[in-house]
Amino acid sequence: MTSLAFSLITYAVNPKQIAAERAVTYIRDGMDVGLGTGSTAAYAIAALGKRLQTEPLRLRCVATSLATEELARAQNIPLAAWDDVRRLDVTIDGADEADPQFRLIKGGGGALLREKIVAAITEAEIIVVDNSKVVPALGAHPLPVVVVPFAWQSTQARLRERFGVEAPPRLAPDGGMFVSDDGCYVLDAAFGAPLPSPDTLEAEIKSVIGVVESGLFLGHCQRLIIGHPDGRIEEKAPPGQ
Image (cartoon, rainbow, N blue to C red; front, side, top):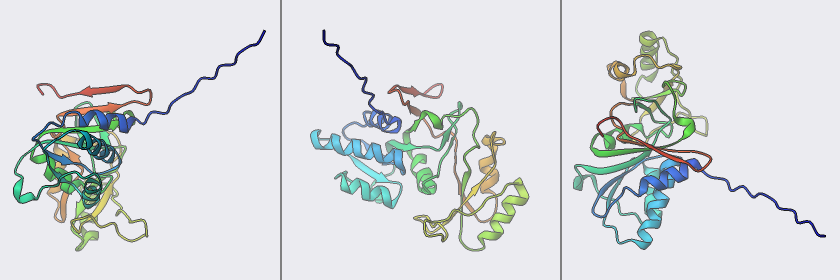
């Protein structure tokens, strides 16, 4: 009698990818769409490109970074000029952390200034994350702070004096200062979790002279899509959304 051996094949699931692909299903014909920046947003851009190959979608898209513009053009996604866009129907973007109140820390990719400008004119901001980014309290991930390059050391010192936090400058791969698409520097403020008073901290940080923007995104997330390694996808929305 011959015995047969069976092997179990496990197929790896990319949580970011499956969540991003779900987010793209919310894009409809005729929409104006914001395209986020980072590894998760890149999966959404790829998924949207595939849809455009088979569906006659009429879209106008805006990108939150030069890198995203390049990815979109490679997928033949139509990009609109800012002069033509005043309001976006939906934006798909990622986050470094998301808490139960749908507050976010963003900016790991360095595009937080443009991402917040786009979020501010978006009707439905869809945030895509893997389950590791959902946290009980913000702050384990450093909080990015965009500053003007002039006298950035002075701005860094003011942040330290006011909040008692170290905020080292972000460096580029070559060891020099990281420079955003808008010509700014980014300081990564290590507050630690729990982040103190997220609802008021954003305004306090932005009141520091030399600060342009912070990576705290409050009230911008209308839908949170969470991918899990086992293939599950969760969708959550703030009350009333």
